[in-house]
Length: 392
Image (tube, rainbow, N blue to C red; front, top):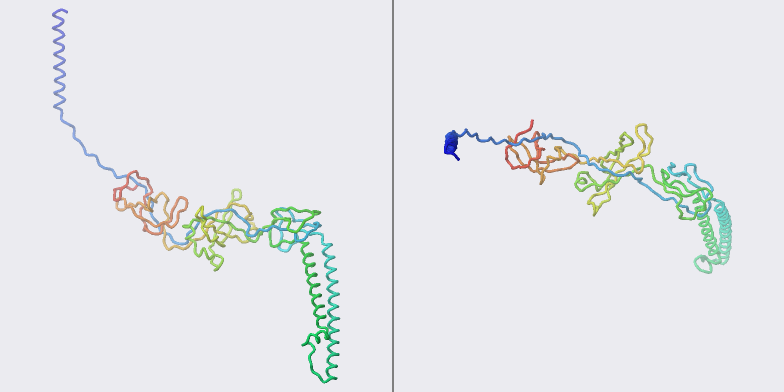
């Protein structure tokens, strides 16, 4: 490499080094920019205002409509069915005492006629025995008057025989037996007609004209239409809100209720009441079984259809009256039954007493005041007394 080229390279390197050193000096001499301290921002929260209410609480439940009375109808005497009611079909409606079906009564009518004849005969025998006893007593008394004696023949066994008292008692006993046989025959004759035990509707049938039935054979199942019942399972917390629950039906105290059912796109409501409770706690579900009753569920109405057995319904039971309570969103309730309030721009944790939890809301009895700002937001970091801002 020539001397001139080396000299040029050295000069260029020196100039570059001088430039780098100068730049570093300038950078080092530049003053630092002013630093502003960051301002802490309080978290923004959403709140609802506590508004006091008063009145009766409502306990919600649901269940399936069942009949209050169910019975399996069976034949009381053997025989062939000779007649059935035109309404003896599934779904047929009957009034109490209406005829459902009849078994051939011929044999039983004959038995009644024979028993009546026997009663007539035994009645005559009793009358004859009475007459014979009266004649014997008259003869005995005349004999006593002739002999000047006053002995009562009925006080001795021999005298009783003389007055034919045993024969009279026997005739009366035989008549009593004949009357009992007549009563039995008449009872069997009545059982040839099976009638509706109460107002109701046919649920199933298993008999027809010409069919032979024996005593105890079920010919139909029947349920009452005067009342319908719904079994509603309630927790102990819900049950505690119903006044006189365990005396319902006994003391006349019955909590009112509303039963709601949907038919198609429409909802219909029936007035009901708490009839009774099973009086024990279910060991598996830890719930009480409450029986709500609806009167006349099949009554005709232009505003609603009948409340059919098997319908799924919602039930609202009238609870106890509360002088003051607050309804707030369920999201406002924190662990350990606490709520967060905004007090003068700060978060305050306050315990409350919860009366009821219903879907997305809760009912608070104690711990809140009118106008309290209750936080419903979720905060990742929270501390009692921290600053917060209320969302507009």
